Each structure stands twice: as structure tokens, then as C-alpha cells.
Image 1 (cartoon, one colour):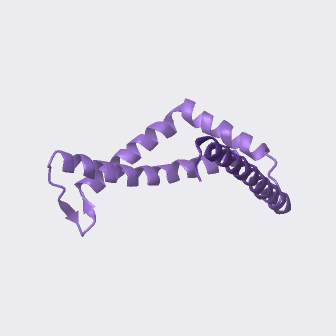
Image 2 (cartoon, rainbow, N blue to C red):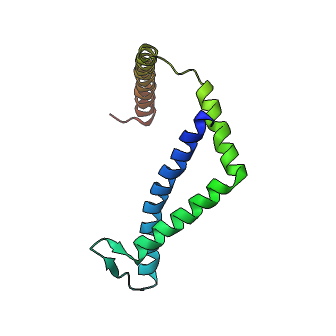
Image 3 (cartoon, rainbow, N blue to C red):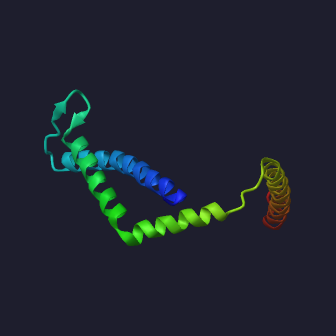
Length: 128
């Protein structure tokens, strides 16, 4: 079995969980919009919208998982991600310092331009 298939299958499961949360909220909104009752079925949190969101998420995930085009695309992305050379912690810290330093320099330059432009505008308009 290809090593990346585990990661792809896990990402489908995580996607289904996230999608089910979104679809539970969406189906509750749709039921509220049509003023349909969203009755409790079991306990306090299991309602019609909860069941609808979970069932829709499972159906969509299974359809996407069984689609060879989608699944092969996810596999190819995972295979390419394994080829990526990720920076070390020291390289990341150095790059972060460079970004912060350049941001401060650019901010200072923009502040200078703004200060000069304001002074010239005040001089032209005669504002004190």
C-alpha cells in the first residue's frame, strides 16, 4: 500500500468531520428559515439538523472518495508534498527575522513619505 494513501484517507475523514459541522449549522439555518421545527431526537444536542448534516457529509465524502479523479488528484498532491524540502527551524527563524526587519524598514520609509507629503500639503494649503 502506498504510504501516502493513509494520509489521503485521513484527510478525507477530517474533511468529513469539518463538513459535517458546517452542514449541521447550515441545515439548522435552512430549517429556521422555513420555520420548520428542529426537534430534539436524542438528548439535548441531537436534532434533525444534526442528523441531516452528518448524513450529508458522509454521502458527499463517500462520493468524493470513490471518484477516481478526485482521489488520484489528492494522491498526486500528497506524493508531491513528500518531495518538498522543508526549511529547518534555524532557517525559518532567520527568514522570520529578515521579514520583520524589512517590514520595519518599509514602515519607516512609508512614514517618512507620509510625513513629507503631509508637510507639503499643509504648506500648499496654508494649514498651520
